Length: 421
Picture 1 (tube, rainbow, N blue to C red):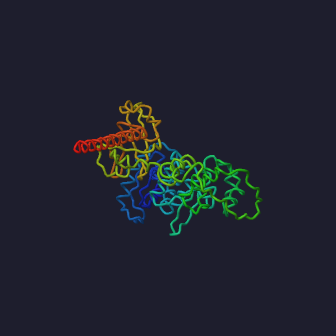
Picture 2: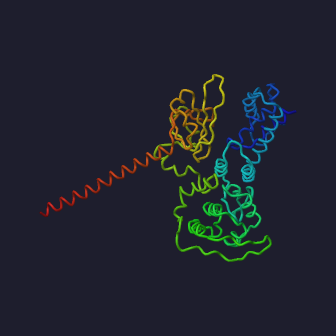
Picture 3: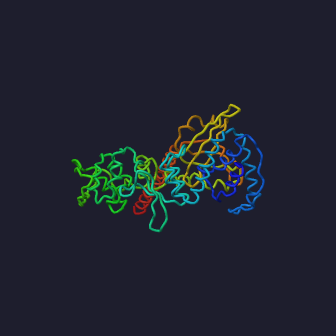
């Protein structure tokens, strides 16, 4: 009965390119059925029908491949728990992606960092909305946009350094009529107040004009005194604090581009405005880095440069006793690049493989099927060091060009005076 139920589930899995977070469901289904150590293969069709359009031979081939995991040694209870949860997660992600990601981000997503989950949501077409003191709640919520599309809104606990009391007050007193009303009702500490302004959570008080965030932050930094005590049932005193005509500390320009991404990483732990690797894309183009999304189109043995933020590093025990390092790189183009450093290559890369946050890796593609591809790493560099050297080289070239232009101009002046003389 267990085999029949699991095989029915295998046959009706939706046609979806699952990511690292959900492809484990295939393996879990097999674990459920084969955890007893038996390897009997079910070959009959599922009631002679397949609602997804997959022919019975294709299901049989998939079952044959997956059944090879049957002797992996999982207990039945463990396998059943994985199978049910991962199958239902795969279905939810396919049919209700916004709800799936909102739930996944509210709870601990395991070894994968939240910004990788956010990037995957974007790649699947789910908009991710930043913190907003008017709308954000204590957990991630699904919001309907003007065009009917569903998006997910960041939760208040993502703001680093904020207290539970401050977050609770924000959730209880929403919406706020003005910045003054927000300050009096929430009574945020100065660092929380400034962090909310930096990440755009107070944009509703400046008409959602990102260019004025610097004005707002400068105003908050110049505030003195204490917030007025406001009772829970007291109506808002609807008066707005005027923004200054001068810039005291931070200007709007300081909050754009790379700096804004850094601010979000520091205050939220994840970039909202853009992927943190976007700033490196011009460098990738100059160096000839292959995007992770294009690796699947390359034949095996192709020499490539891959780069990205290091998401996970694993060194599972091997029967041979030689260490193998598995690296997951995220460049923001879609799937995560899987890089493998075998024992011989580790002498060249050394300990930085475990410490480098932004990595540039040279290696060769290794194909493991029609869609399966990884990179066998050979060399590794710190991407920030490489970026610094490229900038230094560009600056030197620009200086040489400037000297040449000035020298030519001086020579022309000298020649002109000689002709006149």
